[in-house]
Every structure is written in structure tokens, then in C-alpha cells.
Length: 394
Image 1 (cartoon, helix red, strand yellow):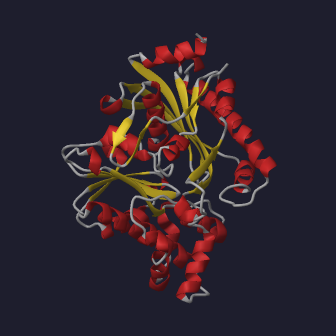
Image 2 (tube, rainbow, N blue to C red):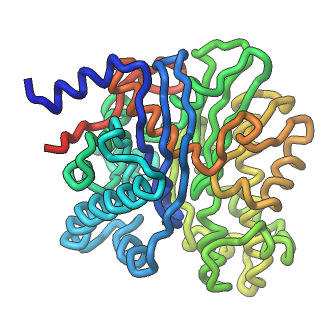
Image 3 (tube, helix red, strand yellow):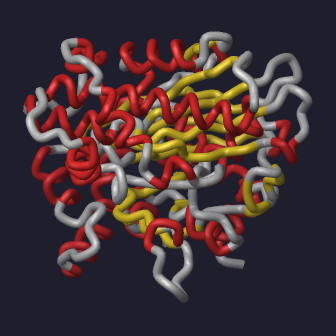
């Protein structure tokens, strides 16, 4: 037997596994690296984040990725080069952090790499007859495995699509395993570039678990902050607080067909971008408007679309909502969500003993653990599948 495959078999029988989870979101802030110790699998999983750090990307690298990100027409040579470059860059980042943490690469059982999303194309969005749901993440797993010498699982979303899903949100599986409770009805809300949540009913009925995107998270506020203030994001909602919500613009945005589609559903920056803002302004008959007012309005769009989705799925408001992702640091959006859900408790995932910033990277480590242990995750909210392509280091 190939010795690397033999190691994979032995790994599955270990009492615990040390897995590096990677997440690079659509905001392109940097690479989240979570060092996770995982015991067991399935509903018996216990996961502890032993180390976590976000390593920022250089401005040149961000510009490279943006040249192919969320665009229907791109330079195929650049796309091909970035697929290899991102894998190598992420490998260097992992080795750097392992050195900082005093952890040997030989102690790591595997890497779980989400990759960099370049394009998300569910059929509802592309509407091309004869073509399936699709999504594309780049950052080749073989480059990661060879450069680090560590077995790597990557490209998780393809199996989800092949089994009948839309490739997102994958938080469903980790949320269900780690955070289900018989004591309260829970919403696990992640506000990244796009907002998504998992509904975990307190009765423990897996068939009632739902995971869905709701619309923009930070993607519009980030884009507007860059355009008008040369800032990568709206720090703590300060730009939004300095402006006033424009009701006609908010209504025009909420009138978009996406918000009338049944849940669950997925979306991405392919829809929610600066063109969406300009089209909504035209629909509302608005030409001149202050930047702060626009940011205040799209921030409220984020809050309203999240709250509307939660109400649609649960039919109730007396829930406990645990928030993670970059948006949990935006107090303006958090306060507006609370106003929309006055009977619910809005908390951060730290109150569950889980670092809100590390959650997504850790959840991919959990998905890798499930694949290695041979478990199929079954909930009513998505296909029962094991995900991730395996790349051997030799």
C-alpha cells in the first residue's frame, strides 16, 4: 500500500486529529488559519481551536485576485497562474504560522483548504438552459500538499453540487454537529461578504435544520467604503452611523427578485455589487446621494434581509442568534438586527466558547475530519455527503 494512503488509514483510527483549517472569503481580507484539535466524529465530535490567526494579503495580491473575481470574462492565463500561486502562497503562510506556534509540520494530520472563491453560479442566477449549478474556488490542493508535506483536503463545494446542492452554505454541517442544543432554538448566523445562517431547532429534529444565504453581508459596505472613503471596510459601522437611511432606496433594493425567492438559496458578489446599488438608485429615482447615506442604507439592507430570512424559516422571533464573521464587529448592523428581532437574543459565538473569527476556518477542518473518518453528515438541510478532494504530499 502507498505509504501516504496507509497514513490516511491510520489517521482515521486515531483518538484525535490535529487539522489546519483555512478560509479565505470574498472580502479578500486575508487567510484565516485555525489549528484545530478534533476528537471523534459525527454528533460525538469535540473540536478545540488551539491557535488562530488571520494573515493579511498584500495589495498586489488582492489586485491580482480582483482581476478575475466575480467576472464573467477573465484572462484564462491569469486564472491558471493564480490557481497555482494561491496554493503555494497559502502553503507558505501555513508553514510560517506553524513556525510561530512551535508546531512541526509532521505533527499535523491534514490541511483543510477552502480555497479562494472566484465565481458562484447557481442556476437561479445564471438562468442558462442546460447548465447546472456551479461554483469555482482556486488554490490548488496539490501545491499545498507538496509544499507543506502535509496531506490536504480541498475543493469541498464540488461534491455538494454533484449531490444536488448549490455548493453553499456549507456551514450547515459543522453548525449542526457542534452547536445543536435541546435547550434553545438557535440560529448560527455568519455575516461575511454574504450573510448566511443555520437554523437549529431545539427539538433536535435534523429534518427541520435549514441553512441558507440571506443576501449581502459586508460585500456592499466594503465596496462602498473602498469607493468613497479609500477604506477596506466600515469600521464598527462608523460611516453608516454618520449617514441616514434612504427609505426609497432600501425599498428598491428589497424589491429585487432574489429576496422573493423561497429559502434555502445561495448568492454571491456576482449579484450584490456596486452595479446592484446603482440599479437600485435608478429604480428609486435617486441620482445624487451622500456616501454615508448609501452605506447606512445597505447596512440596513443586510440587517433586514437577515431578519426576514430568519422569520421566514422559523416563523418565530424568540430565538438565540449567535453571530460570527466580520459583520459581528459592526455594531451598527448588530444593533439593527436586534431591532428587527426584538424578542430574540443576539450574541456572539464566543458565548458558545468558540472564536467568532475562527469559526469558518474551523468548520472546514471539521468537514475534513468527517471525510477522513468516513462519516456521512445527514441533516434535512442539505445532501448527505462527504466532501473534499484528497491531495497526497508525494
